[in-house]
Amino acid sequence: MSAVEPLRVEATSKRGRLSETQWARSAQQRVVRLAQLQVVHDAFDWLHRKEFQLQERQIELAKIPAPPFGEAARADWLQFRFRELGLKDIHTDAVGNVLAILPGANTSAGYVSISAHLDTVFPAETKLDIKRDRDRMVGPGISDNAAGVVAMLAIAGAIKDGRIRPSAPILFIGNVGEEGEGNLRGVRHIFDDTRWKDAIEFSIILDGAGTDSIIAEGLGSRRYEVRVNGPGGHSWSDFGAPNPIVILSKIIQEFSATSLPSKPKTTYNIGVIQGGTSVNSIPEMACMRVDLRSVAVAEIERLEEALRRAADSAKTRDVEIEIRTIGDRPAGELKSDSPMLAMVRAVDAHLSITSRIQRASTDANIPLSQGREAIALGAGGTGAGAHTLHEWFDPYGREVGLKRILLLTLALTGIDE
Image (cartoon, rainbow, N blue to C red; front, side):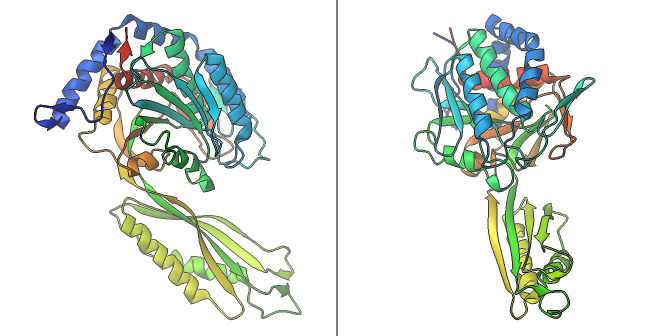
């Protein structure tokens, strides 16, 4: 018998799909009922007691290098932790995602997925000097996304050790390729996979720290590499030959003069420049990597056109300029009457969490762009300095963040008695 039935996206009233107000009322009742169950209180207590162990796991994970396309060592670590928890069907898929299942009592119910990306922005040779500084843990990747992966393990542990039997099955995913040129390849594969693309009904993405936001809107972005190739030569004897660095500089100058609208918010960033071998050599190559972001696809396309015009105007004889797309993240957002959105708002109200809907570029972009129910949440605690060597995470307040994720998960899966 189900104490709380699994949530269905296509739940209907006599007049059709529930309205936003009806979902809000239903969600509040559902969350209050769940929070009164003894097994849920036991799971909350488990999360409280395991805080020091979670910190140790977080430091241990952050010390394992995991650049995009180099996540295998972290994947092995996560597989071991999944086995330790007694999850089922633990395996690594074709692109390197690590998956595990916690079965549900209702075999006809769709899956609720909880995922956290394994990769970081840091090259493999980065010194991962993770240390404690008073109450904080400091070092590359300690928050983004060691905090998210550890939160995922905490939810699995609280449900398993608390002997909670979810009505719907839960799919845990440590996915690859969220950062940089990974281009969301791990989650793309999940939602292209015939086994999972129609089996997952709700997706919870755990990324970084905090509890103050609900990422229910996926920010679109495109990334390009602009490469200038020339004949090269000696700085003295070949003076006058086209210099790719100078040409690239002209492209940057013209492109950076492109006007941007105040609304919709639109940005660009030139994040990497490479080229040249020595001070007395005319380089054969220079390149840059450009990131374009906007709430509106039309603005991204306008910036792309501006980039191509700047390249065309800078081109000279004996020079080749190539613009290659290295990333494309689609936009999308939850509807206002989304049942998942109603549930997370009800959970936040119950736990006295003040949060707001935000737009960002995360793994949630993929399911959101396909019209699926998905949100990205922080793992609790606080953090800052993401993508720097001085990144930090303070676990104070993590417990309420984990309660939030657990209550949301159970509100979606339901509980079987």
